[in-house]
Length: 237
Ligand SMILES: [Zn+2]
Image (cartoon, rainbow, N blue to C red; front, side, top):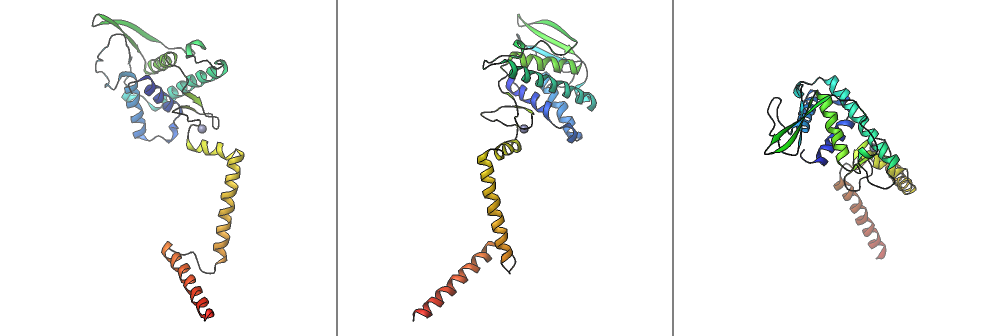
């Protein structure tokens, strides 16, 4: 999760995942991922190798012990932020690519302490605060620093997703729904349905039950043609 794009993908996944399906292991993975997101994979309490010109986000609460309820609340706040970001972009962009800061002020309150430290004769920033505050601050920083073009709202279900290549829908299910609503899709579905119905009717018409294997089906038809051949032969003589 080193690049901004990778971090934004994580933020979108966090904001749109169905937390109600999470088991204990999933919650722990989420805590680990949040830790990586904030501190580049360092464990709680490990000191950060500061790098000049960068900002470092430090949670005053242990991420590994974050309660489910506060993660749910945080998830909802992050989702709200993404929603607002995409809504504003869609309402204002008029074809021009903008960052979030051009269309919105900071839409939430956070309490973080920002300090500057000297590293290698240069300066790095340290952002400290409660887990919720540093995560929101970091998400906000990502949104204002990057073009938000890859963030899309799925036209079928309304979920926000990170667009990769020319993907237009958040998942395959939505792609299929959209395809089936086009006239081409409807036509294709009608044809498929008709063929299916035809096959079922044919199968019912045969007194014998379904052939159990492909081989059996093949044998049955070749026997038929062999018999036909014989009959013709006899008639010929
Ligand atoms: Zn969708």
